[in-house]
Length: 178
Image (cartoon, rainbow, N blue to C red; front, top):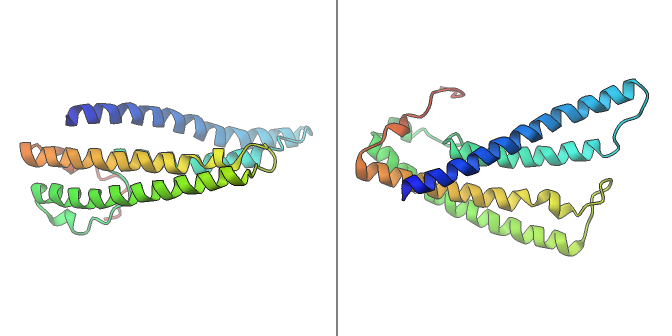
């Protein structure tokens, strides 16, 4: 079962990476095009700033989801650095279960917020699209993060049962402050 969960998660992660690649390219190229158009005297895109701002929101939430998939999400790992692998996996299960419950709750609250935005009918200033459409990534990504917390917990439980805990060493120490 864990292998199937991991396979589904890898597909979702591949899609997220592609989406992030496109969004980062757009967030770099759009302002560059704006600058070039202004220099040559053709103004620019009146909607450019709004699109870049929306893409930043999407990049933040999709990136947080992808970081969770790679066990690179924000953690306070003072305790688990000193634990034996089995104890670390057990500690991870507790922490990830709390994370799953919190992100699930936040997703539920974000869904209610999006429903309120839909009812109000606010539209963006320039693009004239409903505001909720730009913000729908919030509950979606929180659900995916909660799903990933479940997958990570299942992976840790499987590791405790089988004794295969090599994955806890992590891919490398890149980005660590200690």
